[in-house]
Structures are given as C-alpha cells and as structure tokens.
Image (cartoon, rainbow, N blue to C red; front, side):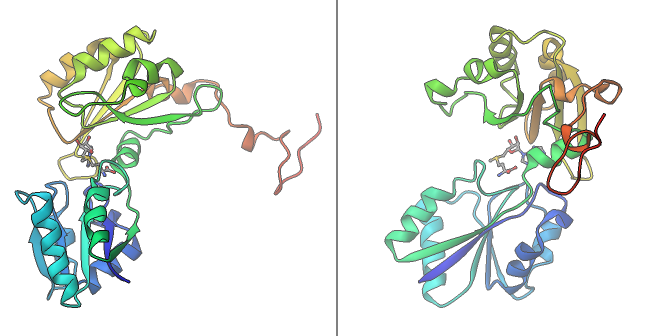
Length: 258
Ligand SMILES: C[S@@+](CC[C@H](N)C(=O)[O-])C[C@H]1O[C@@H](n2cnc3c(N)ncnc32)[C@H](O)[C@@H]1O
C-alpha cells in the first residue's frame, strides 16, 4: 500500500527530532508542514532537493489533494507535525480522506511540548506519594470539550495537569481548578515556546495565574503545567520513589533487610 509519513518535529529545537524522524526528512521528496512552531532550521536539515509545502491557509481537502497528487507520482511525502503528532495533531481527519484513496500512513513520534516544558522547568511530573498521574488536556474555548472531560471533573484527581492550547483561557482554568478544591497557592508553571531560543518561563500560583499571563504578555504557544509536582521547592521535601529505596527488592537488586 502507498503511504505517507507523519513525523513528530519535536517542540522547536531542531535537535529534538528523533533520529528516525530526521532520516525520513532527509529521504523525503516532499515535506509538508503547517505550524509556526516547526523550526525553519529543521526544514533546512531535510533533503535539499525536497519540495517544501507550507500548508497554512490550505483547507483540509486542498491539503489532502496536494498529498494524493504527489503520492500518485511515486513521491515520498513527509508531513511534519509540531511536538508529537498524537497530541492535537488533527492527523486522523487527513488519514481518513487518504485511506479512501488507498493511501496509508506511518507515524514517527516526536518530543511533545509537554515534555519539553517539564524539562525547561526541571520538573518531574509524577512525584512519589504526591501524584502518579498526568492529565494532558485543554481548557474549553471555541473547541468544545466532552462533558465528562470538563476541567473541574479532571481536576478532582488532584494530579498534575498539562494544558495545551489554553493560554487565553486562564480565568476559566483558575475557576475550574478552584471548584475542584485546588488551593490558591497550588504551583503553576507556564512555559512559552519551550526549547526555542526565546523560551519564556513564568512560575506562579493558581490564584495569580491570570495576572501572571497578562503581565508577561503570554497569549499563545504556551504550555501550562499545574499541580504540586511543580512546587519549585520540591527537592527540599521528603518524597522518595520506592525504586531506589535500599529496602525495596526488584528484579535487578536484592533489598537490604533492616
Ligand atoms: C496544536 S497543539 C500541538 C501540540 C503538539 N502536537 C505537541 O505534542 O506539543 C499546539 C499547542 O501545543 C503547545 N505547544 C506546542 N509547542 C510548544 C512549545 N514549544 N512550548 C510550549 N507550548 C507548546 C501550546 O499549548 C500550543 O498551543
């Protein structure tokens, strides 16, 4: 079956694409991308002879027609997506139309911005005894979010929450988390353009989130990480994973009896 490659470009820094993703970029006859969050430097590392198509401004059918025409000519088409294509990549609507034309696909994962953002603030998002769960979601704006996934419902788990596509919705985020019982001093980290040279980090608290966004002029390209795992003084606290506890036995180490 003919196919296209859907490749995760990573969060911005061109060195954060996978080795396999870069290989595909270097083999491609056609490189397509939409996002202003894909670095031009990364595109420049692709096959210099490749046709480069910026799809911003194209509607879905135009984009798909463009792909079909090239695949029918026997060309290798790489569709680059910012971060990891599995998160808000709008990939499946393209795939559905391509499948109707007998064109398949293979996905190469990328470093999602959520992990580049966590790295930027030096955070682990799952802290032993504090939280073992990370919820990846967005606040509801123009794009509806299903009833069971309303933020206050998700927040009832009191775990770490990562919010994509939500920089202009901070008032709503604060209300929803408060209504789930989150305290006003819950740590929040906002990372704008994680891994880019102009990356910006704002550490704040739930109650101050909206004002912090306003003062720093952050309205897009930002990841909001919320929860006590983001506590900047987490290292001073007594959370320890069992994995490295000397009394904990596992497949690779015998525990020390006390
Ligand atoms: C359409 S989604 C794509 C997400 C992407 N697939 C990923 O895995 O990161 C775009 C949103 O991802 C987040 N985002 C993408 N790149 C980012 C970066 N470098 N720094 C911070 N947030 C980023 C922002 O919340 C932005 O509004």
